[in-house]
Length: 444
Picture (spheres, helix red, strand yellow):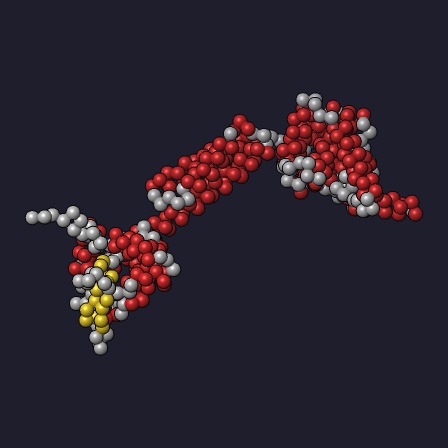
């Protein structure tokens, strides 16, 4: 007897997926009373993301439901539809070959089965009552059989989503915390803490855990990042904490002279010209150039050597020092202005205190004004870090503040001259105000 080499060539292959789908068709007993086909389709759509069913397969199933009717899902009936692949391809906007692949995928996921006619063509007929008398094509009964499974999988998936959302929020919060701590460590030059390593790990964990749905793996990752954030916070706090050794005055002053008078502790009423600020001595019109006593520093000597006084500071940064025009123009006012500008420009109080301790009040005030002036010109990106660098150089005796200030004055003069040459008004508003005040004083 002759054996055929390819007995099934050109016919639909019957494999394990086809066998499973056929079994689901045989188990179909109709939908529950009061349930419409749309309910079955909605249950599939809710469960599909958690079952790994691609959206394009769900779109095919959704389109196939357009040819079914409620009576097809009653007990004793089999919901079957018979649109051609050409029609499906036209409505889906794909090729016939893509339709064939999508239908085979749907069968592999156990969502449809096939009932082939003797000649291999799809077709069917409905009676006058709307029931199918005969039909060959795509059978949707497996969806009705698996309704309970779809509902349970959708509920479990929703619970997993809620738990994963909480974990991802915790991971995001830990990452933001590490970023803030790393910025603090960077501004304070705490490179020994290696905060950059913790930040790199947090960013990498956030990126790799973005699509992970394993709750156990994500939980372990979140706990590790939170622990790193906690340790980094303890290390940064230990480094930058300033102990309160004497009194509340230490928290509001950048010098420790016993004769300092603070607005929070004084028992004397101040005159209308008094200027009460955190860390600044109370001044009146009679105080002149008085500042709380402090040893003369090398930076103070450098400022005197280069002839830097309050008037000089107003000339290099007229916009920043415009408020001094209406005051006594003393170094005390310059220091108060510098402290206020430092707070407005993101320079921490600790950095300003360190500058006062190392460079003296006058040197710290001049350094702050020079730093902010450079920051406004785009020459400095982080004023706090730049001021700490100046303090470090001053501590080593390497800071030439007087030359820096003269360079700023020359730059301001060059900008003004350039504006005059090209016909534009490059005069800062602070300079204009200074001229107006001086002119008014002359008229008096």
